[in-house]
Amino acid sequence: MDDIFAIIEERKDVYLEWLTRICRQPSIAAQNVGMEETAQMVVEFLNGIGANGRLVETDGYPFVYGEIGGQSDKTLAFYDHYDVQPPDPLDLWESDPFEPDIRNGTFYARGVSDNKGNLIARVAAVDAYLRARGELPVNVKFIFEGEEEIGSPNVEGFAEQHRDLIQADGCIWEAGYCDTTGRREVYLGVKGILYVELTARRANVDLHSSMAAIVPSGAWHLQRALQSLKDHEEHILIGGFYDSVLAPTDADRQALRTMPFEEDGKRTQLGLDAFINGLTGEALLEQYVFQPTCNIAGMWSGYTEAGLKTVLPHEAKAKLDFRLVPNQDPHEIYDLLVKHLQAQGFGDIEVELLAAEHPARTPMDHPFTQLVIDTSRDVYGQDPIVYPLAAGSGPMYPLCQKFGIPAVSIGVGNENSRNHAPNENIHLKDYYEGIRHIAVIIDRFDSL
Ligand SMILES: [Zn+2]
Image 1 (tube, rainbow, N blue to C red):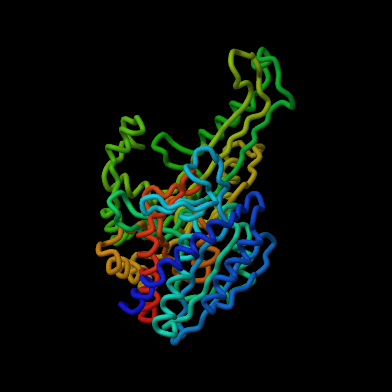
Image 2 (tube, rainbow, N blue to C red):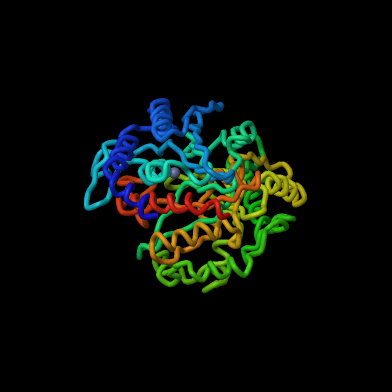
């Protein structure tokens, strides 16, 4: 790989200039700022390396797609996104979010960690490979979306309509970070999510609370419904909820043992006497990584301002999120929730579905997983930390696992990259090492 690494070294300034150029271009999907310009710029980056970049229209912002043929018929895909979060609050930035600034080897700009640094690192790795060898050993595909930060509403439709474009033997997912000691992290999947809003009503109007003697309360009704969802040991009581949950394998448990988790520090930091059910050690980590949740994200009813108001609320609302694990299906869980409420006497409570995303993961013992772990060790000089499931969610299932494509997430972020927050950053050292890591994966992918 020395020839390719030499090119990466030689073209350091070019790759830095690419990164600067794309980070200077705002692309705030939530506000429709700079989206067209950025998509066009990404097309040009792809054309610059001979990847035949083009826009693929969706009902929202377009995908940018490109591909380069290689010597074998194996295909490696890269999924990234060119949109970013809004930069607010601006006064907490030490430099302009869209005027990249380098301080002590760290590059600051909105979107540099999430996800433009990774997007450009993939492109740069292919560029360096081609310059060194003239040809790629495998086919590569670039699948860049523009709506990740607004929930990827068109990924599923895109994948269904363009199965030929997404078909691959493996997909490098968008992001990766390191722990406080600099150990790289590799993620083999994402949790899914079901987000609902419950509305409980009794009378058709709020009343003087003296009426509570004879009129039922929406607030109590909702409270009882919520109470029915979980027992005192935090076990979720929705019938069938756990049926499709995959138990962790021995290899998964092995990976858990390498995860840094400062249990006592975390507990003290949070002012807790204990975690749920007094769990500690491996059992705690296993619960954290592999168990689904039923969380009340918010609830409100009646009078909540200062002082008192004696009111009988006719309506109460709660927002619930369920973090789902493989192979739970968010739409199935939604149906089970509705059925549960009906069976428990809460069939009148409205259940509005606000978001649904499938969990996804690639097994520990999959050859692609092993390839990414082995190459990470070779490039960074130490074993990575392997997370069987990342804490966050993302459209991995509709783009990859649904079609049997293994996906593994790695990237150029650090332990304090501040995604979505002021002073988002990556270390330049991580950027260049990330480019090398991708180049090595391309080099060995044919052995899969
Ligand atoms: Zn993000």
